[in-house]
Length: 264
Length: 257
Image (cartoon, rainbow over all chains, first blue to last red; front, side):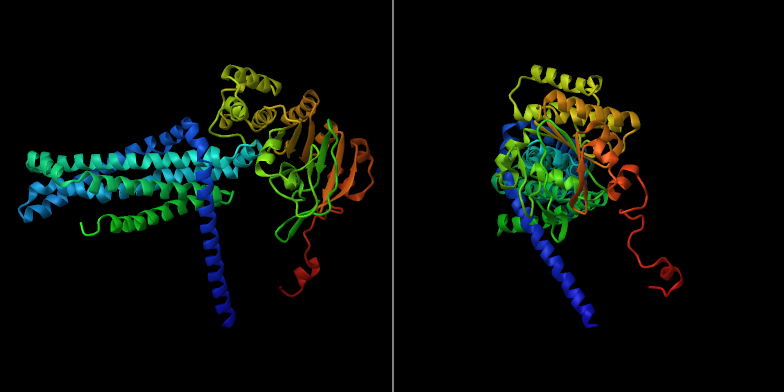
């Protein structure tokens, strides 16, 4: 019995030590990545290539999801607002929900599963097939040449994808609310225009998506770089990227929302 | 020089020097520390005791910048080539030239084609690693390794998994390129027959120590049990066929463990 307890305690201890060690390594890795960002930003075509892979190739899933989320918002929002005789406020509801919350958060979750997992798998496989070692032996730092451009590619793509998600969502809400249900078009747009504040709502949404871009891409490149160089290791790292970054996005969303929209 | 991964001693008291211009083989069974030795020479690992000197400079005491400056003079062929899978053969060979030099693109083109021609694959310049056979990938990786005319070439198991023709081609390329570039080569391998044809000197490593050395003729004539077993591929000898276990009779007829 006592040996079982001792083993359980030592197991928990080992996990905690491992967690703290990884956290420290991830922080150091983040610092190294920033320090070596010069190459990624000076040789911008390297980063543009990653913007294409992380951003442009995620467009389909982002645009289609944005459209459907907006259409659902239009339906649900109309149903609720009509009960209180304020169906013309549908535009405000759809736009605020999207630019403040759903745009940044859902786009980040989709980005984590579409682009984050791909980044982890690619870097992990490069490590498993000794491509990163080969680069080191050629006196080229893989953090500067491989990791930093992918990081900045993700960070730049994320706010743009979130903005496109929100725009498609507003269009989806318009299709359902105005075209399908028949809410007055003038009220839909004018109320949206007067109630949505650029600095308070749109800009805060952009800040959120920028933070999510940093968090998701950081986790993705770190998991890939730290993946054990085996098929099992890379698959585990890819799964961890999606799970950890999704949880981190939701956690950070709460914190940022609490900081940004207190008492508004 | 000695090296240990945490508590596991990999190399203990290795002492060897490789003169300029020679092709030297480091041989030994799988897991004997051959690849670790290459990593120590390239500065990817640091010895736990002793010192590694390349071109007279101590690698183990170098800063990151000094290490990178040294590596520009080294070339390494990895076991399975380690080609960048998102680039064509051409771009793989051009990689170091673009990273480390300001050469104009048309000059880089000529140099890349010359390197690929040296390994017989100028016609495969546009192919991606996934479209190359194992032997071809190894040759492209070789062209990439010699891109900046290194003074020291390191080969990690260059013959592993190759058919007899590719094996012979790689063997001859190692020798010819070494002589043409005036370089020095270290070939880590367990392929005895091919190595004996091309190298000048051989070191045998077992259990982290050098247990035999000599020219190919001396190695062929050696009566030392380990070398004899290794060169002739005998299944039992100093390197036992059976992993240590309790007596067979006890395992079969005795009590269950």
